[in-house]
Length: 633
Image 1 (cartoon, helix red, strand yellow):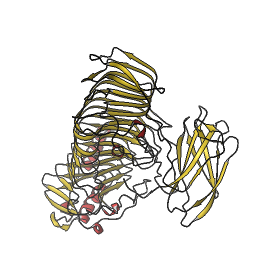
Image 2 (cartoon, helix red, strand yellow; image 1 turned 180 degrees about the horizontal axis):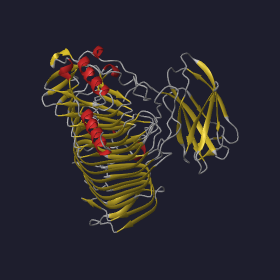
Image 3 (cartoon, one colour; image 1 turned 180 degrees about the vertical axis):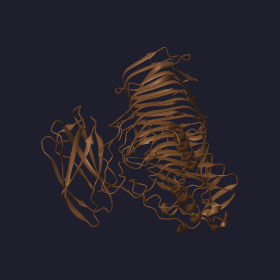
Image 4 (cartoon, helix red, strand yellow; image 1 turned 120 degrees about the vertical axis):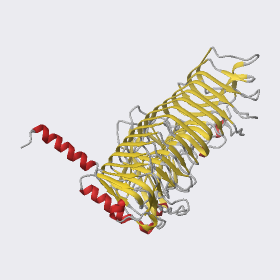
């Protein structure tokens, strides 16, 4: 007989023994010669460890050619020094997998994987060996993307560790975490320099993920957070990473149906980004973005340092689903960021109908190296439905930072240094309410160029600012559209005015019709806030449209709610009812992806009404636009 203490010790010993049982892939027939396919041997070792209750699959030195290996509960894969797992160059060596977990990526982005798991727990890939996707010479055709295997895709898994390994030349995304929880990625190196959707780390609809001490070089986005379904991506910490990429360094989006919350990025080096952005925070598919902190980041040789964007693409993530509202973006703070050799200005941009809220930039220094001839202040496109990247906006009228459609913007201790022959101001605020500027300094190289230019700005406090170089005025504001501007203790050069009032360049083209002949414009009605409008509380809007476009269509309504309470607009057609939340009091677009497609020309009757009698919805026009829901990002 054994006593209770002995029994506990025995159980702990057995659990320890099971957890540390080792299963060498060579013992299950793996050759490790880089010629013979070792997939079955790998899977046999994984299955044996799983059936044993857990253990470590050991990969000894050698080159192991594989297709798809499916990881299972309580199984670790450990790559010893000198070991290489090499992806087969033939996609027929990979198992086609369409998983149960909902995601826009499922089947569309990829259906072949080197390492895959769904619903597994307590899994890891560690060691000092290499996983090589064999994508440098193979799988070079970009489309269809799903014929190129992902390196690692873990779906709806929990308690995951990826540590120390080198992940080289993936044929598609390198490490995709989809709907996972409790993930630790530490000390890995990723090198996938070829273009065409070869991301580094994709954190997609996940919760509680840490990424630390990694070195990442990629042809596409290096570390990107996504929500390819309606699950929020949250509680993410990224720190101590060195990043270089031909796309964006650290990014949220573009897929953003579920939104983002509680994200920190700290102590990172980002360099050599020729076209895109060092840090890109975007949400465009209905998801909100809140409580984001980025601090202690250095950048060198980047096209755009940072870009914060609320867009309105509203792309559904699966058939039979559609986006039902526009998300909120608020509470974002950037601290201690220095940039050398920036080509393009940073941007903070909301929508005309829905502003970003509470954005703070502290201790930001940027040295720009490229001067551009800008578009006029009233000609900056809105691009609400475009691909949501900083590169969409060309020749912005500021060389350092362009801000539009923001409420509660705070800029503290900012230094802007311009390129030679620069004629743009360092900073432009356009449609910004309640901004604060404290100790903002910027280089000016033209007497007619101010430090900052203001249009449609209200309730601003601007303190302790100065220009570096001579200019006739420190600030310029447009006449008749800037109000309640408080200036205090700004430093003026000899003969310099503090502020100059200039004529407005004219009205902006806020609501250009889409390039389509499918549109319905309200006429013969009273104007409301500058546009002819129909009151949906009085009666529904009924109209017919000859649908002559194929594929997925968005019905885009120019609409507002004239009450403080958010309302819902209801659209009925051919027995289908869809609704969209209207949470804004200025004219703005509500894009509703139709659940029905029309393979042939057809006349369709529509009815648009208010779903809530307590709100006051006004509508001015309707346009239909084609949306390519099969396009990958």
